[in-house]
Length: 393
Image (tube, rainbow, N blue to C red; front, side, top):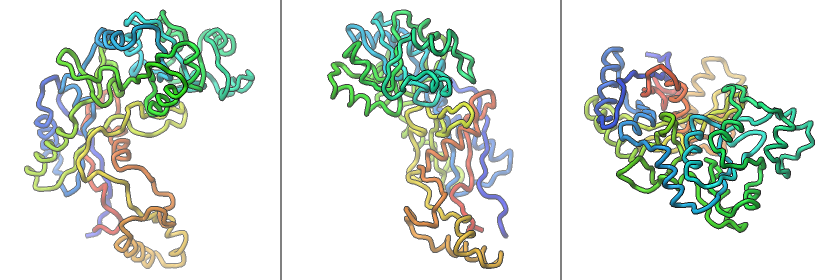
């Protein structure tokens, strides 16, 4: 029978997960109930996507502002710079509380006109009229206010982040520059707070006279029985969990996805793939925000999700070499081409317009958009037919 439905995505509701819960049991039971209640037929290569917050919460991977302050005070014995933090109450404001509570003077360097993930500090059109060169100039906080006003509010949140960060860390000075080496004029000890550019910036600062150069991935990165930690990412990927607490990125994700896959496969007699997902990797066209504030989209996934798509672009074929065929002939030719396609289509014309991204990044974005970030209550997403194509009956 001809199939009329391709990929389907379903958000699956779960009970509230708490510290110490067996998350494999909780997710398995919820997936099982969803499949049975909706009459879903499990198939090989169905994908179960579990949000990172569930994994971290079940692990109890939390830390307080005091935990951050203690670790920072042990690592920095004097003033230090904070280079290119993102503008976020959820992602950075609580971390900043911990940095300030360390008792060390902070020199905060903000990039402009936006942070690393697209949150704007100023209107780009207004910046153009000031004569400020964003590739060269350093702006003080006073100059920032002179040019852009006493209140510069984020388009979506309505927050003046410079004001907020100064209130959180009154023991700080704030500067604006797109050259990370600027911070070395104020201090040689630096905490690199960017996410995706951190390794290059660390290297650049070390090569230009920096002394102690650490990143957010170095804070709360040591194993501890007193508080949460993440040996790979430290504070990266953390979220506010209250005024004085953060939830860190989950640990030991591979153990979880492998265990859940085994449980699903054995029960349903089908081969499932499983992944943990955080932020999707996409950009908002209005606010210009690039969503990915986590260090990676997926910190753990099963083996079958390794790699990138290997797909033909049907529109390209239909508009070029097959354009003179009838509809029936074109459909048959495309099916044949799919059956005969090379195992690696990288660089071939017939792939023009396909998305050259990792499977886990694509799936994580799909799952993130499906589950939402508010009150949908569907932190697990089931994806079916993702690996099917036009040639599959």
